[in-house]
Image (cartoon, rainbow, N blue to C red; front, side, top):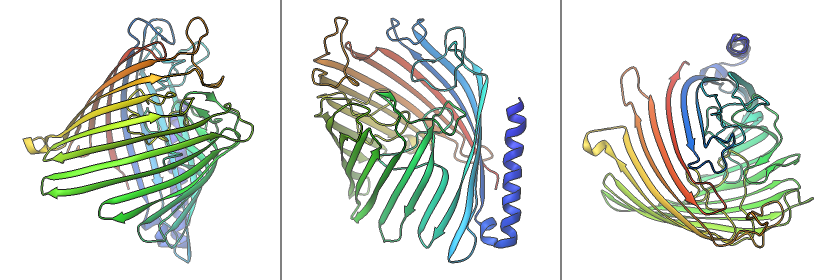
Length: 438
């Protein structure tokens, strides 16, 4: 309760002080300001079937929590270079979890946990950034939310992930967006700390001092886009990305679409994650006809190690990285078929349905380094591993009235695998209500 009593008054005071100062300097700071408040209610149940890999030994994890997320974004002061600030305050509250049901030790990560693995009753985050803008180039220093294929903040749990450092976005050249940054810490979704060390999804914590990235997205016209990015997690890896996407209308209600994604990852510096040299790529093709969209995708990792990325982030633009599985094990081949339905045509505007099925095979850890290798009970590296995953999702967004923007999303996943992963069934129910305060 003390955190809540301090958290939101502090945000209001910061906003009020910043706005008053800006009003004295230039109207642009205030005129361009916004204050958004989001309520997010999140229920997460992950059933490990027969207890495989259950973090607490009872075979499943279950957490229910509520978040209040306040975000303030100022405009920019007038002048050749405009200045502004962004600030946020976030509060997470446990509604139900305990009795051995918390997700401690796994990847549920809705809430923080104490030393005994019990979910904390509440936690909060407060942060912000100063920003400057020159023509169509904007730079932020502080707590930032990068959005690139090599470093992308994650917003898949109760509170969003963030990074601390410098972030630049430029649209000076027509149809070209350039992004760059250097970040020295991250904040995981289930922690109050804004200065966590870096961690990767498959190798865990890594004592790297910074991650940097640079690249851009270019619109070639005729509904074709290309992206090129590179990044370095100091003393761990260099990652390079190339991708393209296109849509091609054939008729009023018929459109072809497709895309390609490619990553190359190699060890760097002190090789904190061992030595590796990975290439992984995916491609998709689909057709949209009226309210229906059907897509197929293929993916392959030709390297000897898992293709890794920053923990709980969105830094993996691969078609078969879906609700639970990434299908990114060494030598793994995978394929997916997906179907989307927009119910607007049937008199339900705002309602959409999705289902997909992905299957992977040939995962082989015989050439993996000591960090990423997975072994059987006799210590022998696993080979010829297989898995499949099925997802079903229903989403509804209220289209009008006082509750406009209220969103309900129900997600279900079923996955089965051989020795290298758990079997599990998973349900997530997420309800969000965004409110524009300013």
